Length: 423
Image 1 (cartoon, rainbow, N blue to C red):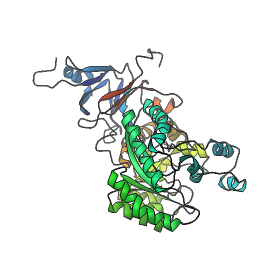
Image 2: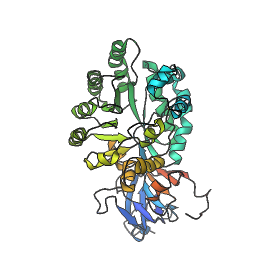
Image 3: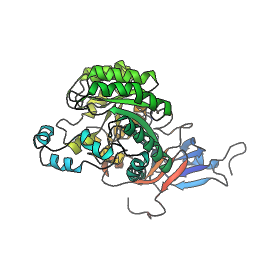
Image 4: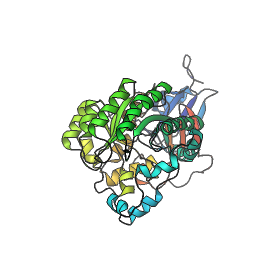
């Protein structure tokens, strides 16, 4: 029984070889409690520490989860996805593996890029879009992702963007995953009437999305072939007026100056950012704007200059990692992202784990609530069937998530189905 005066926990996770706090303020830069345990009350973490200190919080009604010598870490956060879409662009992917780049695809008359997804998505109702996304969302949850940011932007019209964000809400209700909505109407430039398109976004779509509470952020794709810095500033200013914070797809292929605009707008994040300069990184760090990078996407599209995340991290900017799941990058696992981040982008296993937890939470402005293990934070937790957290980046070809907990609820428990083996 709990000590007199102590309130029993609703859930206690015991038997972990390591509890990884994901707190860079710790002496080891990440915070590892060997042989630790965590107690949960309601939706929040009540206590964390050595197992002997947590055991007294077990009461008659406490549910006990045995980590069986695995690693207990925060729920993974995927801070940049395009979860809601129908169809895929696998044909584009296959053509790229044969050596065709953007210019080659265009010369061959082959559809590519965001506009190639419009036909499969425009006009679809929210229910149909949610149905298409559900299997992906469940796979992401099964890999330990408990929070997913997702964007609109494949139907490329007012009604389709609203349906996409409504679908995201449906996915959250069905799966229990926390889904963060971002409006990305400015995802591809119309072949004609771009000014009218932006006018309608600003006059109609942004206010409608804000009024319905469908999104927290507004994103714009800033690129020489998409939208300009001035157009982006105009859209993000209109979004800010109705309470939507800024994000930018930018500087992926050329340095167009998106980082300076992001700092000016106090954006939550700059995403992609392959071509960011050292000066850009300093400006972003000073502004408190994260950089979200996608080594898995760079690999999938054969980016000629994969992001140098080590250089970014050394600049002092917050470096978040995400899958960039989309029709041309069918990437569902942040565990895999960690592996790519270490081998392709130069991050340490510690930095990679921070990139998919606390740093990713910062990129969607949720780090006060999720992304690390501490009393008072939301009980988003994952038991990974590995003996040391660094194995997550090493064993990236397999799914090590054994138990997934969201807001104190066990959403997935594979331990009953998988007897302990040689880890």
